Amino acid sequence: MLRDDVQIVSVDDHVIEHPRVWLDRMPSKYQEAAPRIERMEDGNDWWIYEGQKAGNFALNAVAGKEYKDFGMDPRSYDDMLPGCYRIEDRLKDMDREGVHAQLCFPNFGGFAGSTLQKSTDMELATECVRAYNDFILDEWCAHDPQRQIPLLTLPYWDVEACNVEFDRTVPLGAKSFTFPELPDRIGLPSWHTDHWDSLLARADEAGIPFSLHFGSGGSPTVSPEGASTNFLVAIAAFGTQSMMTTIELLNSPVFHKFPNLRMALSEGGIGWLPYILERMETVWERHRWYNDVNREVGPRELWDRGHLGGCFISDEAGIAARHTIGVDKIMFESDYPHSDSNWPHTRKILAESLVDVPDDEAEAMCEGNARRFYDFPRSA
Image (tube, rainbow, N blue to C red; front, side, top):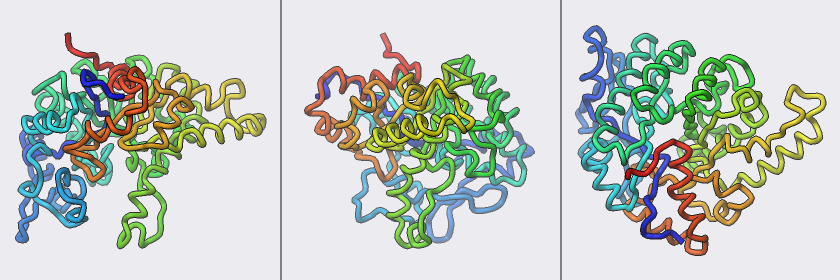
C-alpha cells in the first residue's frame, strides 16, 4: 500500500506558460514575432506566433472540471485554475492532491517543440527554446527547487543547436530534456541512424535522461472521424505511439552505442509492456540473423538494463503485471492539468490502486524510481 510518508513524484505534468514568458526574455528584434497572448472578441485567449494564431488551451487546462464540461473549444486564462500557469498556486494544487514533486512538459511549444518546428524563422524558433528554458530554470523551478524537476526543450530541428543548448543548460540544472519520441514521423532521421549520436553521447556522459511524451512524434493513425468528430479514438490510441517508440528504440543501435542512456515513455501507460517485450524477444530470436541488429543482446535484455522507464496514471493491468515489467522501471504521473488528471483526488485514487501492493514496491513506483531516474534526491 502507499504509506503516508511517501513523497509522490509525478514525472508527467504540464505548465501553461503565462502570457509574458517570451515577451520578457526574447531579444528586441524578435518582440513582434515572439509568442504572445491576445484575447479575441469572443473572450478566449490565443497564442499568436509570427503574427498567426498558434494555439489555445482546450483540453490542456481542464483540471477540476466536470467531465461533461471537457471539450476542444477555446478557453481563456479566466477559465482555468491559476495553478495551471502560476507557480505559487501550482504548489497549493499539488498539496491539495497529495503530490510532492513534478516534472512539467510545455504547452505552447507542444510536448517537445512541435509548434516551433513549424516556424518560418528557425533562428527565432531556437531563441524561443532558449527563452522557455530560462523561464523553467529561473522562474518555474527556482521558486521551490525541491518540488519542480527542470525539464527543458531542445531545438531538435538542428542537432548542432541541440548540442549547444544542452551544453548551456546542463550546468544550470537541467534534469531532463523533452524530445520527439518518433523523430522519423515528423520528417527527421530515425533512431536507427547516426544523426543523433552527438546529442545522445552528451546525454549518455552526463547521465541526463530524455522524456518522450506520447504524441511528440506525431498523432496516432486513426480514421478521419477519430481525429475530429469522435476524438475518443485518437485519445485512446495515443499510447500506441509509446508502444512504437519502445519497439523502434529497443531494436535500434541507440542503447548498444550508449550504455548509460535513459529515456522515459511519458504518459504511455504500462499495461501493454509485457506483451510487447515478449513479442520483440520472440521476433529477435528468430530474425536477428539476417537483419542489421545486435545479435548478442536482445530487446528484453536492453529493457532489463533500465534504458527505458514506463509511466502510468491509472493502469490496473500494468500494476498487476509489475513484476513482469520490473517494479524498478515504473514511475507515476499525475498529468495535471490535462484531461487524464485525477486532481484533486490523485493521491486517494493512487493509494486505492496500490492497496494490495507491498509497501516497498508502492514507494518505488511512486517516488524512489523517479528520484533515481531523474537524479532528484529528497532534501535533507
